Image (cartoon, rainbow, N blue to C red):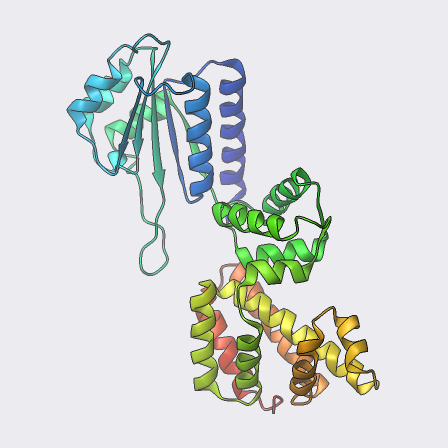
Length: 353
């Protein structure tokens, strides 16, 4: 999660970018980098669209993954072809990891007709730590710090993502309640490209209805077969740790994210708890299905599973899941490790029989 300082710097730089676009007064260079690739791509495209006429490829030069310093030096000094501006883009080239002194000097004397855009997407090491995309001691970075508008595209906060998703929902003339919105983000995560893609699928699924419900979200976004989830909970409830871990690996492969499994666990245990309470009160399968908002097809399985737990055990399990989620969100523990420990604890807990 970004610090308050990083958040403020991001907000200020985006405000400056908007001012450039609205005023048509562009910096000579832009450095757009960070962990949120969606925003990097978005701001790059906005700049190209505002600086160059539509379809102008003569004055757009893009270099991806690698570059030749001499070629870039020549290009940024070249006047545009029958246009006001030339745009040169270096995309994930690693240009900021070496000194590139000659390029740094060329950028200092770049004509006003050239706009240089450098983008670098932060990637990760095997242990989950971010890889460095720049060396701030280099000549090229020091030049950019003086000449460029620098935007660090940080991972956006939960509240920012909620507002963004709500704006996407509103643009489709639909409604989504707070619970369903929270579930959607729990399942999808913080990657904005994935959020947009999953939201588009969700809107298509709900094309003929106004309100988006939690069941809609789970039907389209989760991608986890309900019967596979039942098998997983069965293994956990019976203390079959090896089988539970195998099924967790299957679920993780389907959705590639521990956070999404957490969300499914919470929902599933909540439904099992409610099914137990309703069943103990003597309600019929049809009544339970209506109360839970689930398909009658699955009610028998929820009831069967609820009979393997006492109520206290279900509450303990839900609390354990909630604590695991909190530790993950706070960055105290890696998601996958936290969930594997949770599964182990649930399987071993004497309260679950």
